Amino acid sequence: MARNAWTRNACPGLTLSEALSDPLVRAVMRADKIDPPHYEAFLRRTAGELAQRGNAWPMPKAAAEAVCC
Image (cartoon, rainbow, N blue to C red; front, side, top):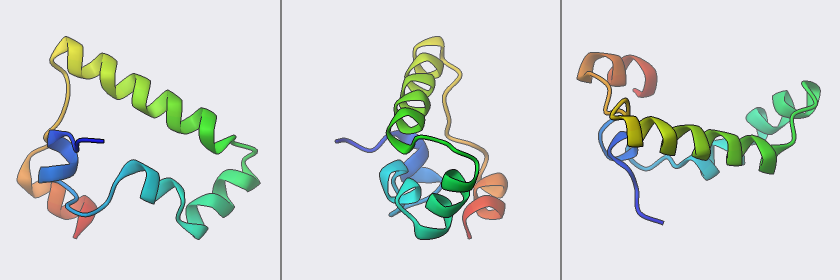
């Protein structure tokens, strides 16, 4: 799957699938009773809708550094 502008600019090397498969993230989702495949589909669908409306990322560089680095 091609990476979108957000993954290229804000968090190089980290995909949504990788983030959602992280053991700590999985533990939190399990505690909150979140179904990982359903949640991933929701996030991808929401990102697609935002991209169609022109509300997609990339986020400003300072915000990207605060979030990812």
